[in-house]
Length: 340
Image 1 (cartoon, rainbow, N blue to C red):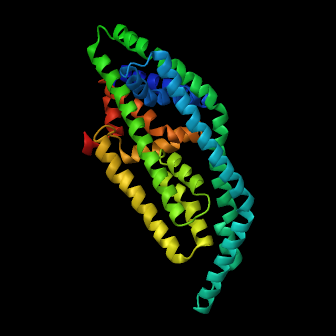
Image 2: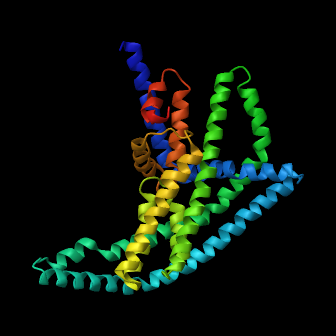
Image 3: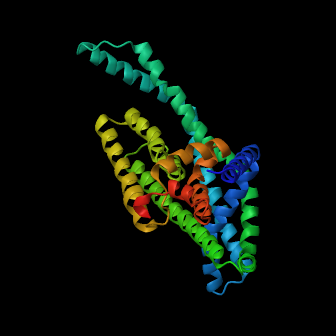
C-alpha cells in the first residue's frame, strides 16, 4: 500500500474508534434512539394498513399507540407478578436443588465415584444462577420505565414517515444507486424485525403453552423470557430454557425434565433453523461467526439492549460497507458467502 492508502485507512479507523467511544458514553440515549427507529419500522406497516382501510392518519396513530400501551401494560403486570413470586421462592428452590445434588453424589459414592460435595455445590452455585435469571428479567422490566420516551420517539417517527419518504427523494434525487441502497437497508431492517417479532411471539406462546401443560410454575414469566431472548441469536434460546428446566427438576421427575428439554430443543430448532430461514430467505446474509461476535461487541457498547439490536445494527454496517467500492471487502467479511 502507498502512503495515501495507509493514511486513508488510519483516518477511517480513527473515526470508527471515536464513534464507538461516543456511542458507549451516550449508550443510554443511543439505545432509546435505536429502539425508537426499529420499533417504528415494525409499526409502520400496521399504520399503513389502517390508512388503506380509510382511517385518518391521526386515528391510525392513536390506535397503534393504544395497542402498544395495552400490550406493554398487560405484559408488565403479568411478568412483574410472576417475578415477585419467583424471587420470594428462590431460597426454597435453591435448597431443593442442593438436596437433589447431594442425593445424586451419595448415589455416585455407592457406585465407587467419590466427589467432594462442597466443591461441586460451590461450582454449581444455584443461588447465583437464580439471581442472574431474576436480574435478567428485572433489567427488562427496569427498561420499561424508559419505554415512555421510546413510545414518544416512535410516535414522532410514525408521524414523519410520509414526509421522510419525500426527504429521501430529495436527498438522493441525483444518486439512484445510493437511493436503492438506502431503500434496501430500510426494507431489510423492517423485514428482519417484523419476522423476528412474529417468530419470537410464536416461541413465547409455544413455551408458555408447554409449561402450562406440564404444570411448571410461572409459565408466563418463562414464556416472556423466551420471547425476549429469542431476539438474541445463538445463545438467547439456550439461556431462556435453563430456569424452566431447573424448576421441572424440582417440581417433577427426571422423565418430565427430559420431555421438557426435548420440547425446548424442538421449538427452538423448528423456529430458528426452519421457519425463520424459510421466511427470511437470503435477506440477512450475515456470517454466523460475525453474528456471535456482534453480540459481544454491541453488548459491550450498548449494554444488554445492545445484544437485542446486534443483528440489525450489524446489518446496517454491512449494507453501508457494501455500498462503497472501497469498503466492500469489509461487507464481504461480514457476509455469509453461501447466501451471496
